[in-house]
Amino acid sequence: MVRREKKRIIEIWQPEYDKIGVKLTDKDALEILDSLTGFFKILAKWERESQIKEVVSPKVESKIIPKDKNKRVNADELSKIQDVPVSWIYQRTRLGQDEIPHIKMGKYLRFNPEEVIQFFRNKMD
Image 1 (spheres, rainbow, N blue to C red):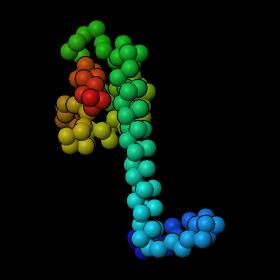
Image 2: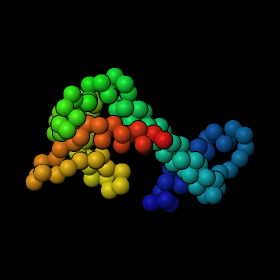
Image 3: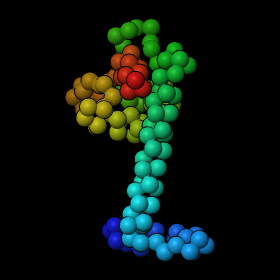
């Protein structure tokens, strides 16, 4: 697979390097591939961080914390409060250490809104 990617990178980038009279090597292609991969990893990280910031914004926090501090909400309610798809909530309950805090009640999931807010605050630190 890396071989095919190196070939494709050389196909794409060689015309630009031809302008300055440089022939790309396989090593150059790997460096470009590593740089691009790193760049997109950073973009993905920034996207996750911006989603977390939205989840714990004061506007969301005022909507998410019910008057009854012991009230638990289901995934659908949590997704509406946080303005994210239900699938995003469920996906975040299957991440091991990075999962949203929840309680399983048989086949159902329940969330304590305060714990969810605190979880995302901790992720931002």
